[in-house]
Length: 179
Image (cartoon, rainbow, N blue to C red; front, side, top):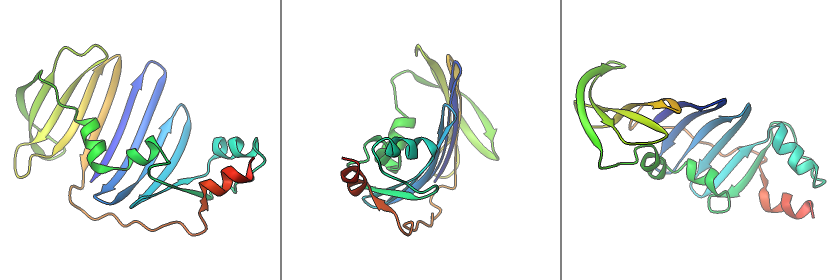
């Protein structure tokens, strides 16, 4: 599955480009002008170095090459590891409530959809578009309110090719080197 998201609240904008499978995935995450690239294969999570990560390690006396990768276990990677867990990410994005109601049917991105609207939320009001034919997969979520933006879902059940980056440095070794 492929998920693309751009959501804003005030001046803060977050972007997300996820390709997920049952066993892992890849992501590009942007927040406040900082971009991160992640990869998860099974229990291993890889993070490509960026200027902010390199500065963080440099303060501890550890040199991390530009564009290099750091490897950690999904458990020790915290929220980054959870981001690339397909079931957990879907649960988060499609958090169900008791206030969803069908409001229409529409064609979205070439798919006939059932439009579900949620009311009663303080931060934003999401409208969820679910495929009306075949498997009822989500097609799009549109958020309106203080938090606003759009999340699109494509490429359901299509394979995603994942390969571990060569030369990834173990996070534990980098942390020990900085002591």
